[in-house]
Length: 413
Image (cartoon, rainbow, N blue to C red):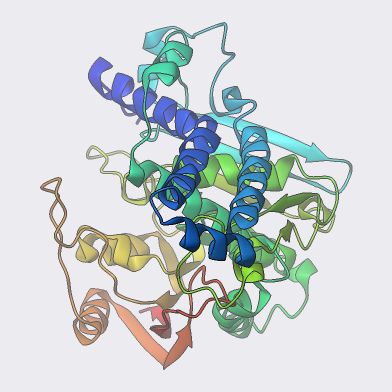
C-alpha cells in the first residue's frame, strides 16, 4: 500500500532539503566570517599586545585557517554539485501527483563489473523534489548555527568512517559488531555463503559499517534519515575514484583545547579504502528515510507487511537513543527480524529528544530498563559488555569525551 502526502508535507520536505543545500553552499561565507571576528578582536587590543601576538604568528594562523576553510568549501561544493540525484532533473519538476504517490525512486551507480551501490528513496522521506523554486530560496535562506553545526559534524563523520586517522575509533565500535555477526552465522564461514543473509544497518550515517558488512559477503542495506549524511555518503560511495582523493580540515572551526597549531590545522585524506572495490556480486544499498516510517509503517488489514520477518540481522550502532519512543524502535526491530534473527547493538543512551524545544515526545529509559524492555518484547540477550569509545573525536585535542557504550547480542525468541 503506497502512502500519500499532503501538499504541505511535500512543500515542507522540499524546503528542508533546499535549506540543507543552502547550508553547504554558504559554509565558506559563514566560516570565514567567524574567523574574521578573531581578526577584529585583535584591533581592540593595546599595541603592545598586538605586537606579542604577531611574534606568536597569530595572524598568520588565522590566514592558514582561512585557507583550510576554503579547501573544505571546495569539497562541500562537490557534495551538492548535483542535488538532482536525489530526485528529478532540476529543470523538469515532476507532476505533484507523482510526488504524492509515495512509490519512491531507485538510483543505481555502477562501478565497472564489480558491483553497484544503490541509493533508494522510498517515501515518506521524499527526495522527489520540485526544484523550480529551490535556487531562489537558497539565496534567501540564512543557515542557522544549528545548521552549520550539523555540517561541521558531517566533516568529522568523514574522519570517523572513511579515514586512516579514524581507524582506531571506528574499529572500537565496528569490529565487535562484525565479529558478533560472523559468529552468529558461523555455519556460513565464507563470503560466498553469506550472500542471502540480509543485514539492516539503521542510522547508517556515511555508510562505512554497512559497507564493511557487505564486504564480508552479507546482503547489507543501510538506512539513513539525515540529508547531510545522505548527500555526503553519495559522494564518497559513488563519486570517488581513488584512495585519498579528497583532503579536508575538520577541526578548524574551534580554537579551544588545542595543544598546538597542528591539532587544528592538520589535513585528513579520505577515503582510506576505495568504496568501488567491493567484491563482484556484492549486495550493498542505502535507503533514505525515517526508520520507523519505512520499516515500521502501519498497513491496512489484509495488506502484507513487506518488512516483517525479512531481515536476518539488524545492527544498531549509536542509534537506539535517537528514538522518541524506544518501545516502538524495539518492536520494529523484533518484528522485521526473521525467527532466530540477531540484533547486535552498541551505543550510549544520549536520548536525542530529551528536553527538546519542538514538543516531540521522548521516552528516556536507563540501560537496565532498555534491556528489560527488550526481553519483554521477545529478545534473548547475550554477550553483554560495556565498551569505552569516543565519537568523532579529535584525537589530538586536550579534551575528549568517552562514552561507556552498551554492547549486546540479542536473538529473536
